[in-house]
Image (cartoon, rainbow, N blue to C red; front, side, top):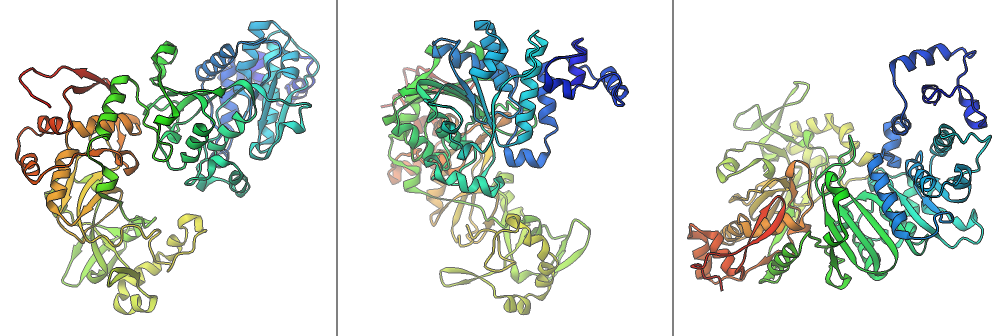
Length: 609
């Protein structure tokens, strides 16, 4: 703070808050400040905000979800929200319910100052409200806003801020605002904290919100409800937040909430572009207006944000969206037409095929290994510390990572193993009793005992397993079927069949079946442009052009019903694309160009029903 003011040529202030913090020439640490100034140019508010965020410990960032929101994002949300509200700017009240060090409130203060020429003291005391769970965030907010006023020539001795330290999940604005009727504008960047990283207090408080009743809700989700319910009629909420609620299981209750209340919702989705430095989050901007309306959707890049016009949005009635399965929101009428066409054909994927995720040990580097050698009875396992263990072959199973195989030959050549402390009893997979494990496989048991402390740290040590050496989850232990493997994430997925019914897998996805023929038919369909153009439009985007292939995105793909002769043709034809387009009734070909589906006229000599 002192560096910033001195570099603005402000060496004394009347404001009591800043005066108490300002390092003066007679102070013993002034020389250190002088040296810092010579090394670090600090003359921009964004630098202060970033520094405030920087000094938050990594652990606190994980628990509280604090993150710096770039100025151009804040300004976009603030400008669009206030301009759309279209009311007396001298009386509107604006809130950030997770304000951090108040970057959003800074943008609001500047907007109101430029629009009304009111004194900052009036703006702070009458129009801006903030809430944060951390005391240091409130302290830094007061410093930041005070510096704003002082550097623009409004050096008052004090300001009365409406900034409160509390948990937004359990805070009532009626307790601090007399005759509270709601805010005109709510803006912010709700904390992104996944459920496994929440503190106990937040885990308990989150349960009271109706939007958190599905899956394992992340912390940002209830901020939609608490924000919307603190708006006046026709008030506007503008957030930048994670975009997973559009499709995710834990976003189901939120989608139902929006649909039930017919919320006027506008979504600007950044897809696979990562907006925040050093954070692997995928985001969107959401504007909610407290009135009955529809969902409006637009996908864009950050560079194209300011070029978006109202007529570019695609509008959806809530009764056309699937709250339970996830919303299919696409960027053009052509894309929407294509998705609806595909989903109307035959039977839905989820009703025809069984899809399984791989096993989950929660500590793969203990259980899984590539043998450095073997003999008739043992595999030899080498640890990262170069210690070698003999492991009985009888307790080991073959395992493969579908993300790393591209052909059946690669699956056959794979020699990865996993220690499998289970046994098959009729149709059930049971964990080996410890005395049985020790007696039948003493070397494997000794190795697991050497890793007992490591295994105990799974799930942060808070979960009790059926046995200490059991896998973290029981999923996919009992698969005795042929498998069609494909990766969770890829640019364009590959689909590989395994004829080994006992082969285990991890990190990918598999369609399982007792019929190799049916899997080969499905493989042909999923390798086609018909499928890829569909999944490209409804899936979740990731960086570097990767897309998600999770079963939540493929489940509504229409599987055309084929006769046995048509299956033979599909398996034998050298032109499966045209054959499948005819089966799907696509008399118009759709091509993806620059991530947009475009309609292309078919050649006249091709007959596509």
